[in-house]
Image 1 (cartoon, rainbow, N blue to C red):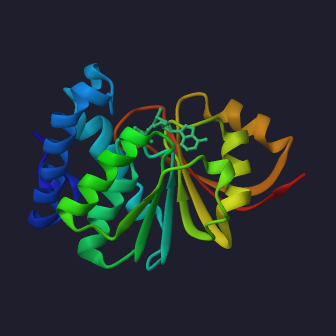
Image 2 (image 1 turned 45 degrees about the vertical axis):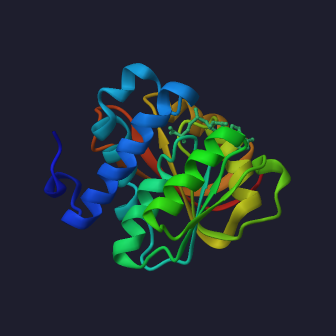
Length: 203
Ligand SMILES: C[S@@+](CC[C@H](N)C(=O)[O-])C[C@H]1O[C@@H](n2cnc3c(N)ncnc32)[C@H](O)[C@@H]1O
């Protein structure tokens, strides 16, 4: 079992993460928020994997938008950490699936999190002008940069966890988008990385 120290969070934040995990385990059989096989490793595969993004974001920041939040990774984990630190001021979770959006709203309400849900498609909503944009397991980098061009503030940072094929995705994306990037190795797995991206514009 993972500890508050391993996640670098207080006992209060850890207790909120436990409450979130309990809700997720309760809802998962009905709406498949995470795969059944990864549920056994929820704390490392999903919670710690999401929590590591927090330290890579500019601090303080106002709006953090998480696209395709699903069961709340990383958006709800970030909102739980924001409750303790006061930053980001607001997390916006964009999720087009009604049942998942209902789950996200339930966790937000039960834990009084500084977050809200937009239940719609990313492509259809007005620009979010986010200081930080995250998207985990949503699309390839070329598509994600299109979302960043739409929803990131001019000086904002996008954080994209990527698997072992990240260099190939980067090469493909560079033929369509201009951007600067920084690579951090994932703390939870060997091979995957987190790309921090800024200054996205069309080639
Ligand atoms: C593979 S899941 C990943 C969920 C979560 N980010 C995670 O890492 O566990 C992708 C989620 O994005 C949502 N999604 C996919 N395309 C979307 C779009 N265009 N607009 C809004 N949500 C979308 C899906 O409904 C799904 O819940």
